[in-house]
Length: 328
Image (tube, rainbow, N blue to C red; front, side, top):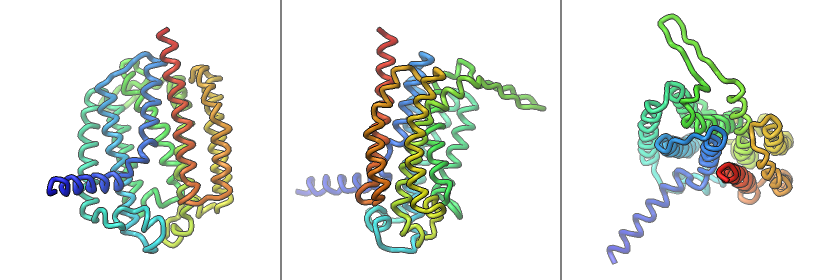
């Protein structure tokens, strides 16, 4: 009996932790990581398992720390003490975790991510270190500070750029450092960086669809939360431009994701087999219109996540099929 009670307590603690870090939302960082990794394999035929594992776990820890920080700051700064964003969505308000527990989790995750990130930088180069440090700083500012980025109109752009472009780029670069796509020369008097612009542009284009659809997840979230955010003094993008313009922007971002695929194939950044990703457009477009017509957190917000997962799954499958094609 005592053993069953102990197991139940352990299960509840684990469930509370997973709720606090919102493990179910980590696809937004994991999928771009796999896109970048597969791009390194299929385009440059290079792969480093140790670097991939180091980045994967460091990335996951930073994402979990950012999510926990969002919950912590939302709880601390909340004016409205009821509603979905406070009662149903915040684990701290549901007494699953105390403020002190949340801070301890953030410190532990940030420490672990920093440790792994430093090892990764030592195994690669200074470029990885500087990009990692800057991304880490932005991650902290996203959730903390006098005015966290997540509470401003820049939230969508920042999250989309870093989780779409930067993660894809960095998860590609850690495998191809020896190719010298980015090189630098440091002396006492000058610092010179040499860039292979064609390859950098290719990598950016590969990350563009992820950027648009990740931004849309936050845009959908903020559109649904407009009433509560206004009371809680969160000056998000939908509050700034209004619900009508926010939903229009949401649709344009969907179109931008698919236009990026066409552009990528045209400039040879993406293999022709990625035309298969375009097959998801009718489904994604229909779900997008469903959200636009009824933007409700408890009902249609999940459609933005489903769109991202559907598109990303086929996008990744396209790279996998291209890899098999190369082998055969």
